[in-house]
Amino acid sequence: MTHLRTQSGTDSLLPSRREFLKLSALLTGAAAWPAMTRAAGADEPVRIGYLPITDASPLLVAHGRAMFEAEGLEVAPPVLLRSWAQLVEAFMAGRVNVVHLLSPMTVWARYGSGFPLKVVAWNHMAGSALTVAPEIDGLADLGGRRVAVPFWYSIHNVVLQHLLREAGLEAVTRRVRRLQPHQVGLTVMAPADMGPALVNGSIAGFIVAEPFNAAAETQGIGRVLRFTGDVWRDHACCVVAMHAADLDARPEWSQGVVSAIVKAQHWLRDHRGEAAQLLSNEAPGRYTPFPVEVLERVLVPDAAREAIYVERGAIRHPHWQQARIDYQPYPFPSYTRKLVEMLKDTAIEGNNRFLSGLDGAFVAGDLVDDHFVRSAIAALGGLGAFGLDDRFERSETIIT
Image 1 (cartoon, one colour):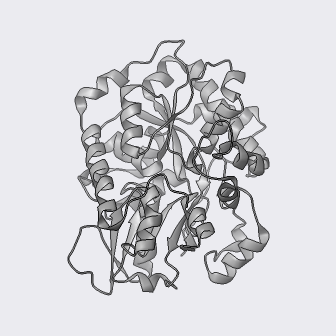
Image 2 (cartoon, one colour):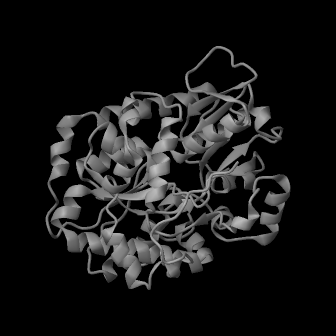
């Protein structure tokens, strides 16, 4: 079985709670912020921090195919971290300077705690799913059961709670002695622990980034109930975040970083099988702990498998013609505006009072710096290079 680490029973719920508390402490530790208000030296190399999931694909492909070097940049070996708390801690301390973060996490970091980061591009679209135990036939069957999410500030939590509301179910984020039939208990859990927890029955499902859903399928321990991209069309999941100080003080360096990542996304669209090989545990870089067959299930389209998903209802909008995971780098403002709106309707543990005062239009202009990514896209011929109309605005579609 493919897991980063294995625990059993309710003990597997504890580490992620600690990680959330640790990350909360980091993001409220004002003493650490001044270090990140100063840019690194002009010759400081690109230092990538990542979690071993397909969300990190563009960063890893850009490294593996020497795309940073092609932009005239020095790059250090990517640093693999095991949790969001570790990744943010390394980012805050300056040990890494380019990371992929859950898009809602960047909202929390900047406005919940004033951390000086900027979103410079989307890292990928879709690439997540709700996977359930074999006996679960629909959302109604989750009533009275528990479902794991990777983090409170995640698109997974946002989409899951939207689905539950539409199904007349109530999301419960705190531990209770007994869940009512109309309630679904949500638990933050490390992705590597989700498969074992599904097997031992401590959860009835999980919603998470790939390739953990694909791994559950190939191992025969769970099935995909819905793909998140089939609910929120072409949604961003992870975004590329950098230090605001670097963008201000090192614009040429920053442009090279973003250009390399954009070129990696462009390459990924037409080289999915090669990407699965590059990212696998069988490749020299060993960027992820997953075998090629699991990564291919995520990255390489399969019409026959997609037809089965349509038949089972995991895909209800086949006319959207979406890949299981896809790549285009432009951070559409409409997504950020809608994300802020959706976060206000999402139950989130911890101090989330800052959300009530946030204006989505302001966040879209303040959190995101899109001028580097616009230049990188223009160098490739425009948004058409990513299969899009050449317009930097769109409408969001969310349909259950």
